[in-house]
Length: 475
Image (cartoon, rainbow, N blue to C red; front, side, top):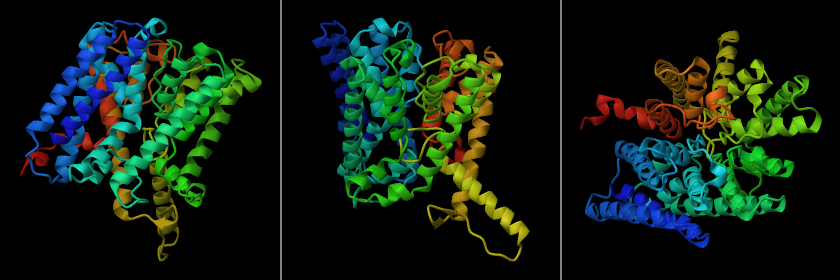
């Protein structure tokens, strides 16, 4: 509760930023943000003060519980500005929007974004920026200060890079934060250089680097009708999906780890192949041809694979084969240690290595074979963990899709809704929640189910599902 209080209080402080934006724009909504900030800080710092005398140790079980409780609390208070402003009709919608923001999913229930006050647009972008990396980085920086095992939370959030390139977690957190801020700034400058207005550029920079996907326009990036904007987004969505610790190493003058990282090479190769396949679909279907087709294919493939969820065109109109293609690649995700979600490329690599090892063992029973990743042997328990993740991911997907189907959604909407929630992608498929659609028309039950799926996917399944085991609660 101590750390949860600090995080909630920090979120309250962050609410003052969109208040200042609205005040500068002469929008009365600044009072809503100030009110929400006061309530949030009162609860957060009150919780911190009430638990100052608590023991400073933290077990793995407590770290998992704290991670889930902290995320739910942050989402619950992050929803207040949406609800109090009246931009959404119910708290259910506000909670959905806040969950989508902090989990960097990008699914939205808000219509009329083009005329929404800039403070609320900034808050949506800030939520995704914090959710992409900032909340976890702040937690890692705060935990050592409180003499609590911060690396346990680091692992609970499933930033899978275990290499400690700096001696202390606080230093790692600070370094990643600086890289994240610098990359966001570069993205904003690049957006402005190709013609975006300053406010649109800053908000889109936050949601691009965080691979979140919230836009300031109902038509997303497609509303700008600017090839330069789309190419900038492609570059920074890709950069946001690469392990940030590699950027820190590069700043230290160590370029070899980045160039030799098998995960990065596999991720970029996968993007290249997927873009070529999408380009052929767009070209031969006569929807987008030539370089225009390449741009739209690259943009939408990178957006879906990285879990960003921007759209430049309705790829659902490219045909049933394109619908199936985009449905499959939404599960891929980016690299571990990045802001992207999904299954993540390294898990496919581990699975491939395990299968290759097994085949070699069958062909040569007396041989000795070891699966490797990044030049190091993969332990059997790592392979078992990856396989468990795949099983839980698919089981969760099936259960969520069935629940959505039984709630009244058609099959395509239920399947793509479950997939986009668990993979934290944003747009689904079909007329309702597709790239040209919106989640507003869904029922409250369906929105709560999808919000639960977003949390489950963002916290890497185990952190949430373990709370439902009776053994977890035993002393």
